[in-house]
Length: 139
Image (cartoon, rainbow, N blue to C red; front, side):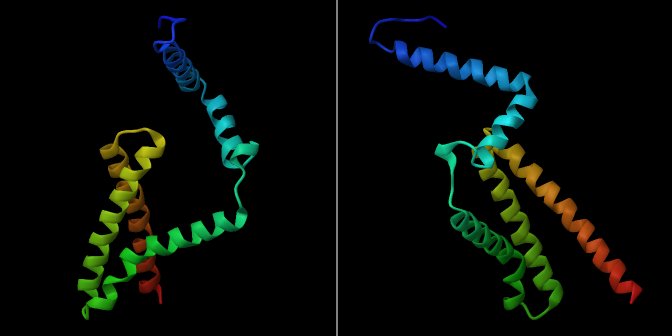
């Protein structure tokens, strides 16, 4: 990176250099990355303080929206297996979409984040389903 004292973009070069150095530092120091993420997440920085009411209502709304793909199909299908299939497809597509959107925040690859989210949540769903089947058989 060259430093340029002229007004023809020297500031931009310096900003890019700082961003690059910070990126490299946090890539090589996971402990430092964790500390700065904790500081940002818990509102330690004055600029990052958030309203607890707003955060709670946002979380509530997002949980409600997240439950819709797995619940709404049962209102439209009379056969439980048809509702289950539609719910599984809707939930899978939603998880894929959420994973893709997550890549915006993590600066990762869109397709990889989408597939990761789908598989991780799908694995959790399979475990929950298995526990439900075992519970049903035990009573």
